[in-house]
Length: 147
Image 1 (cartoon, rainbow, N blue to C red):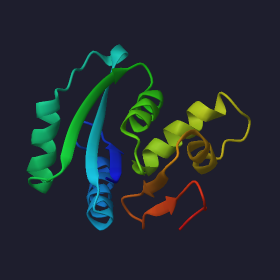
Image 2: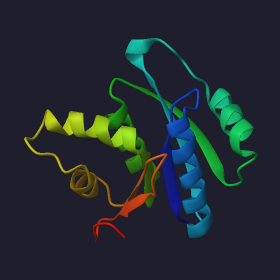
Image 3: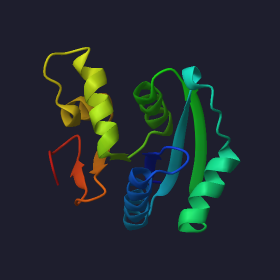
């Protein structure tokens, strides 16, 4: 069974809503299960529950069949997302353009000139869909660049 993972913020921001809308489309077109992921950061003290996340998503999009709601706690959002994507054995990850810029900063600490699409393709064996609220989604995969 295909698996789509989409990390979102809580409460749902405009960018998270756009990213989630695209993830829902991808899951439907791929006949895939959907995992909606939120990361509670240790350092900010706010704790969102799985049921709060589910209620917020269903208030915005209605009931979503074949959808799991996951809340993880971590120090770095990007690292926690990578861990969850690997644990889910995701086929597709849908991320917002703001997440890409945060990942770029994280990767920049490790290497001089980060190519986020390439980094994610090397770290994850899945397609990456990047969503900007005002633009068309961009999709890249392990075997090809933008599709």
